[in-house]
Length: 205
Image 1 (cartoon, rainbow, N blue to C red):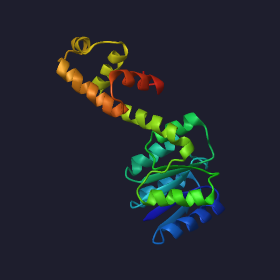
Image 2: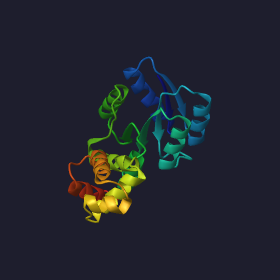
Image 3: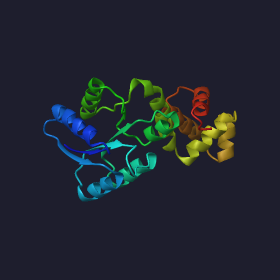
Image 4: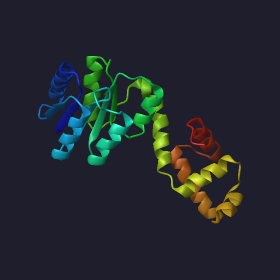
């Protein structure tokens, strides 16, 4: 496994590399100290498996920078390390589908356990951020809805019946039911009422 550690603190990078090699002795680790260097390496090295990204380093623009990385390498695992505990910022970052989020103040034992989980193919989010992750995942699911499904969700929120929705969007009631079932699966709820409550709670409607 080839891992890129991107952090502007050399001592932290070196220590992190040591921890990782304890867990993954065969890993190849590269280090950079600014965001522009990340892009250069990713364009040159096509086989980077994971990037550990410090969002607070020079030229890194958080959410936007993660999207830039994903544009170059869609399959790369991204582990974010940050000092920020700003809820709205964290929500936005989690919506990108990153594989892990670590607070810089994370203690050593937790840090090692986090990377063990990640190397085993699991996602790591601190317990304190689990609720934020759940909300962000719902928003991520919402983004995958078709325009028609989004339209149906809005009409459900207006209290429209299946028959009324079918008339308004020009489809059969059977088709409306299919759209509603897709909505329920995406929002991880069991009925129309829960769908509306959940959508309102996370600011979708």
